[in-house]
Figure 1: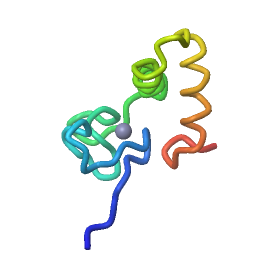
Figure 2 (figure 1 turned 90 degrees about the horizontal axis):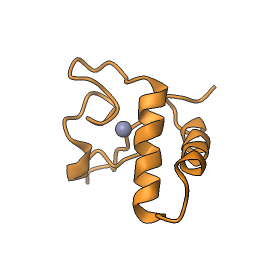
Figure 3 (figure 1 turned 30 degrees about the vertical axis):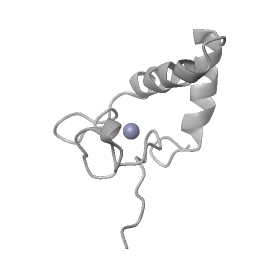
Length: 79
Ligand SMILES: [Zn+2]
């Protein structure tokens, strides 16, 4: 049985068609072609847009704050 794997940066299931090209533990949205993780701000902005896609009444500022909290729980960004 295949274990479900998630991007260590954004939490997206790596089996998802939206994950794009997989780079190790990261999806194609979070890492460049050589497997380098994108800057935190770029990943945070991507997640904010994703949050807005199903919460259209939320402002971008609020979405960025939520994305920041979200990233703190991710292995790639945990401090
Ligand atoms: Zn990702």
